[in-house]
Image (cartoon, rainbow, N blue to C red):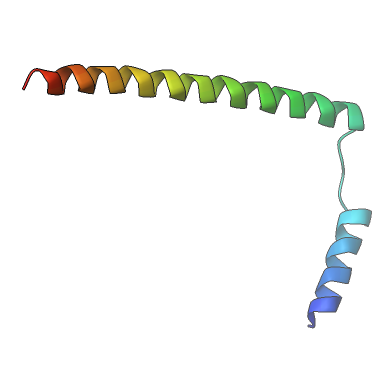
Length: 62
């Protein structure tokens, strides 16, 4: 099977045999993912700052 045939068959599969969600549902899902990504990034940032402060204070003891 050549690469060209593989790409053609893949495109046909995506176009004809896949069930896609509606445009509105895709937009809502994208917003939900973006919001949770930002919240997770903020949580990781805060955890990093807490650990950084703890380690800084711990090393200052010695």
